[in-house]
Length: 345
Image (cartoon, rainbow, N blue to C red):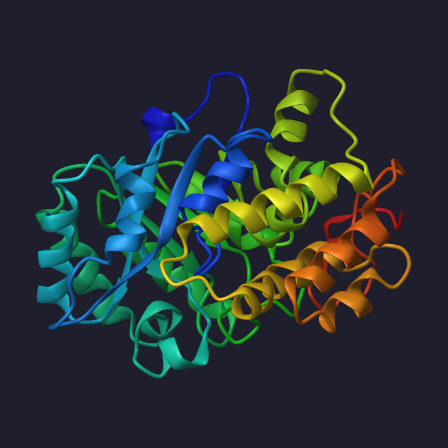
């Protein structure tokens, strides 16, 4: 990871989000200011698994010019080693191990964040993968499963292996996305780890990200849902660190983003179903429409057909009023960002 860090400023990375950060999304984001590197959706790994061809396209067909790390999730060590070796034959920047996914279905299988309940398993897994992976090997984790008091033991494990980077979502698995982050634990990792540490969670704009960096001294930020809501966030960060004026996007620019994403995803759909496509877009629009003025969010939830979808976007977004910089304070989708010492807008 150190090889990919920019000179003179922190790194800004797009977080892997399942069923969101695919090749079409990467293309659309990159046109508005690409992150320093991407991380794929996770490859599900188990004894009967093979590499997901659609996710592989995010690697082999990625023309953004930015490095792409391939992320794996699973609990079966031989299968993880096998998949890591298979992935090494593709033009990846490195392999990332998911130790943070809080989805209940994942944790019930003792994968993702569920692995944090058994640190000894995590230790064996990281050690074996480090031996098997000849290139860059990074980890994305949370602070623990139930409580952040679990993190010091996990940090000892991370320190004991020669990993190339550590990304920390500053919450526990059980906190999911419903609390503020805990910057002090990320800061402890920054001080302890010999490799770069990237901070993740609660970054919704330049102000929240700058506050997170100041409190952690991390080498960079990984941004997920904040980048869905604001695809210009990476270019805004870079402008801020260059002391340049950053783009303040308007509702009409948001409209163009939504339509472009709609079209890119439609082109990638093998068996296109217009009604199903609208439902797919509505999952993403939940983050985009949240907190905007008027009834856009309310109306979009009720859209069924492409015609309704397009008309709602036109009616609510076809104007040049600047977009709000942040979601609403107290938002259920973007919980706790105000705890990073950010003033209410």
